[in-house]
Image (tube, rainbow, N blue to C red):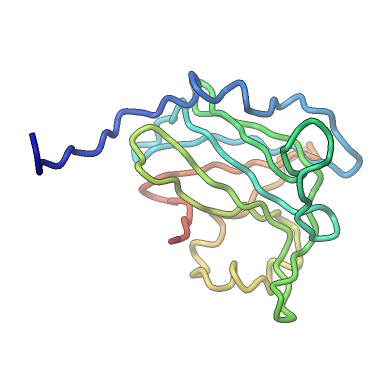
Length: 183
């Protein structure tokens, strides 16, 4: 039929089927100063979101984003893909990144840029994860641009009794919705 538009398809994609083999496992080798982040992805009703994927981009300890290595893999340092399980849970281990220069003399606090993909989303969502107990959070230009009552949705919290473990949940809607950035 000529001239008719086809509606967008919102059922897929199915990340576990198509991309799970590209995802990083939680038991990745730890490096000195590494932190483990655990969390869940929850919908507006507080229900877990299975079959979602997080794509993480983060700098090294000096605040530099590293290009792909010259080895067989074209995957750059500071990049991971993480799948949620049937309970919406995810986890990853990484070396805490350093502060990033914005290019105008201002510094961003250590953070991870997170792209979020899930069934039913036609475009991915973009957010950030900051680290609790980081004094640079108080002056980070991006974090400070967010209303004070919403900033906590971007900060991974220390898990009591586990010094190298953080908790960060992603809430897609509703009370305590995670801040997502327009692009």
